[in-house]
Length: 129
Length: 418
Image (cartoon, rainbow over all chains, first blue to last red; front, top):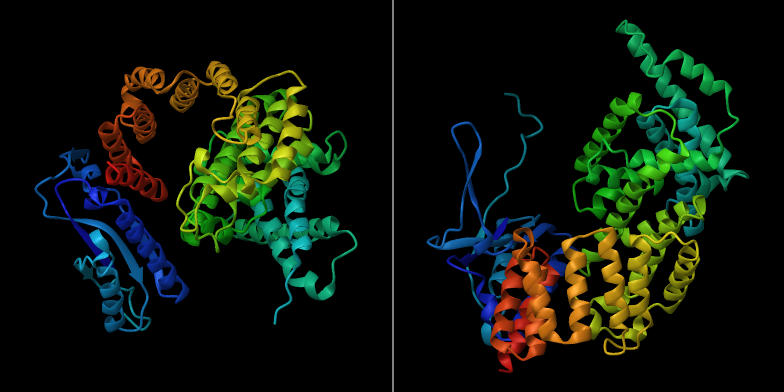
């Protein structure tokens, strides 16, 4: 799982970019997903709505949901993720590096941090508890 | 290489699916069992026809195969139940006799028609109604429906199983449908078809290679329904509405799946054949005299389709039609559309004043479409700063990725050229 994080504290920064840069960024992301999909490596990908729409929910004493509003103090927020099915961790890192270099303002690579995590599997076929 | 059914045979199979299911249901009643049996018969046809050739009477072939599967299933179930010493039939004995002996009085048209009503059973959630309609009436496989809604096949299989169980448990409360029952429940059926259409129409992200075309599927299902109820004006209205909307499909998205709003679309890309078919069906429906919300919305779509540009659109008539629509269904979206038409007739300031009234409703005040329309009107009124704010606000609130991208780009363009 490749997780793309964005700074917290408000709406996505992309909102304040010039139109050409937004266009380039969106074009990159769409193309990136298409390539992963064509290579048979993409399991799933989602973009998430902005941090300002996020809610944090906890169960109360009786299990009822207690909703907290948005969290401006959070440093980082998950903006979206890809799940890829690849042969090796190295391949996952290579894909993550491509995503990290998505174009930002002025077309310069953002080099944003992408967190790579292994999705755990079910029990092995010969597993006997 | 495995031989495959050609497109013609596939279309035929899917047209026959609801008819065959209707026949089986009349005889055996058990919706879940009949539905599974028809799916198996369709699969058997897809495997056997390419090699053995199509039977002389495909429908009879399917009925025979499906009935055989169903009786095998019933036998197996009965054996199991006997073992469990629970000899309880799902269908009361008197009804079994009546149904088996009696084939007269009810025609096949009604059998197929009742399928629509069963799939849109009030005991089901609308997600289940949609899935079941696509499977039982549309003849799609579980895997195809799952792909269409981008959920795992197991999830969709579960949803279908739950739906069939819900119908079974509500079954006792639902005797034969009378024409009056059908009239009562028709709006639910039309709504489900329209939801299927909208799902297909609004979620297209450009990557439609593996997705079943839900908009086309909804149109196909509505066509079948209009063959069964050719004189119902709202059935015609819905079919016309979908055709007149779908006609703009090619112009609606750019190469990256980005949304192109109506006033910026290349109208030469609109499908003229679809437009004229929709207009013809709409005329026929309107001539019946019983106006309803689908006919009104179709008439609005037709006015857009007929105009050479946004400026040449008959906005005054569209405003009048929205006012009429509001008398049938007073929804926030209809009121918003009315305000837009009002602005097109009277200018942006009048439109903004109308929006302020709408925003008073707390359920609607935070809706991204309200922000988007306000942004557009502010832009036209020359208030660039406020327009940018509203576009960005709308972009934050929408949950649709293509829509968000469109709104962000719009705000950025305004900001760039400021």
